[in-house]
Length: 351
Image 1 (cartoon, rainbow, N blue to C red):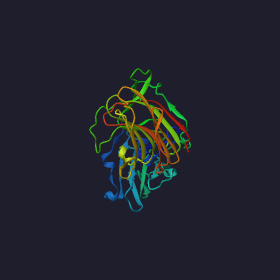
Image 2 (tube, rainbow, N blue to C red):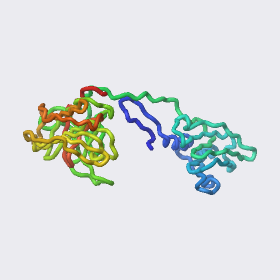
Image 3 (spheres, one colour):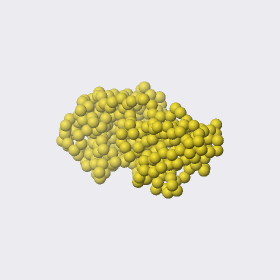
């Protein structure tokens, strides 16, 4: 449904969606200041099921563009127009997009020009499931740019976040909930960090979620991710690994592993199921209290079905769980926890 999709921003690959071309049937052939002609719009044949059309005229009161849609039509039909009121009776240029097709070559296709009769009338056979533009303007259409090919995001990957201005976003780190922004590091650490900024639960539209952000390639399989973390107040921080299928933007609706640490020193290694939101505790324990306003390091390693959790350089648990095979990394916090993260490092194989 997007106008454009770029699921791999590191590769430069993109695709242009059908909606973009549906809109282009208006925007490519009109301009600010054009006006709709009320008498030159309505339902085809007076029946909404056949489709609809609108007409706009230029500020020169001569050029015009008629945009027609037959999205719900079941059969071909003939559209007939009569040009009056001083509008151009010159050649009518035809552009068409087949929105029932998944082939980009069927979008914004130039058709044969139509020459109105001496009395200004002309006709066109319309096919179902199309958007058409009939226009006296020139210069519209599709460009010739082509997308680069997709490719996996390479490893190793590292970011100390010092290269960004305060208040900006870190490259490649994508907020899902909460607000992860660049801030000056606390507790005497020079430079800049990523800080989770929302200090309380927001007013949600449909569902409540704790803050989290994701980074990387969903095809990453065997890797080690580590980061420094500082809890500004009592609460929890999470390091996420092998994050993949996501049903909606909550931590309960994503396939992922989590290393969760608390200011008390309690930690847990969890696996979440996107289908039912069920977080399974795979391992848990306690280390010396992490406290607040103190820097610590946490890490997760994935090698096949072997998963290792590390806190302050010590492997607190190694488990076997092959449920989730690949996915992104990420940061998370408990609700209202304004934690800071620094020195993100991801090493290993992208496959």
